[in-house]
Image 1 (cartoon, rainbow, N blue to C red):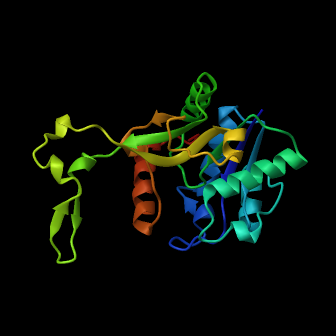
Image 2 (cartoon, rainbow, N blue to C red; image 1 turned 60 degrees about the vertical axis):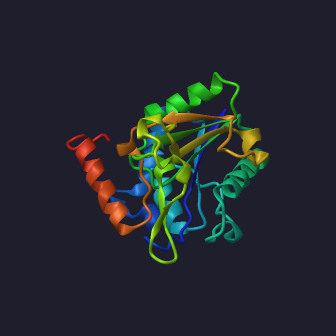
Length: 233
């Protein structure tokens, strides 16, 4: 059995009420809920929140709110793994034992059901413990620069000063859409960014990280470009 867990606290700072802010006609959390429902993968889709308004909106769009998250797990220092573990433990004690869990972020409007399905199928057919979305960096990270205290620049990896870009290994980063995992792996708090995780590679234009109002506007433009005229998206 599978469960989707969408963590959505109410106290976002840089974009107030970010998890339920209107994004191209819907509260942004609705996109994650609808993608999970459309995938047909989940026996239950829950939202873990400490906020009653978020709970009501999430329920309207089709998610379950079996509990309100404790305030100690809803501050600026709470990590996602703690939230997922709390939800899995609550469900195992009060509902049923799930084999797989998928953490879906509430601010992932470009999430696709086929990616959720691919992540689950590849994980289920492998000996891995997790599967999550990644994408490539636009430039070789081994030629990265940093600013110095005297406002100069130095290379982070000076040994690659004369290495051609095409001779450097391709590097990936976490997209921040979803994290499939075996529930026992989540409960053991195993590291996700490790050899026992499968990468689901996405094109860079579908990788979003919405932290600022500028990020938000950019993502709306990308969404409108991709899904213009498709009312079912």
